[in-house]
Image 1 (cartoon, rainbow, N blue to C red):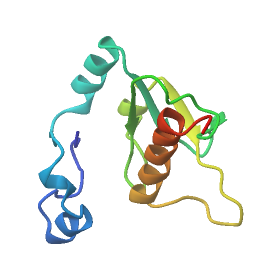
Image 2 (cartoon, rainbow, N blue to C red; image 1 turned 90 degrees about the horizontal axis):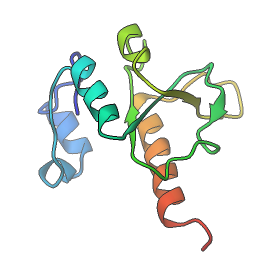
Image 3 (tube, helix red, strand yellow; image 1 turned 90 degrees about the vertical axis):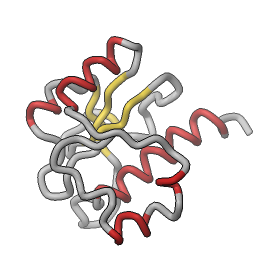
Length: 122
């Protein structure tokens, strides 16, 4: 789901970065302030990243239905969207880097969710 202010999905660089996934996955555009509460009503936990997040993404339980909300690289999620999320987590990083870009943060979180759902105990 792409919220207001997202990068243009049909920008040539964006299209190329999807490596063809754009043509195999559903993509919706809409107002997150109405879509996110509806997702919660249907049983999804809403989670985002914050530098001040209380828990590491590796401690967070992604086994249930989770919607990962990724904000812009410069500002993160809007204050209005931040008020809607259930949990704020952080991605621990050694060294002096303060954050990852949005695509890398999303990749880390989605892979951790996949790992918990598919590869635990193997």
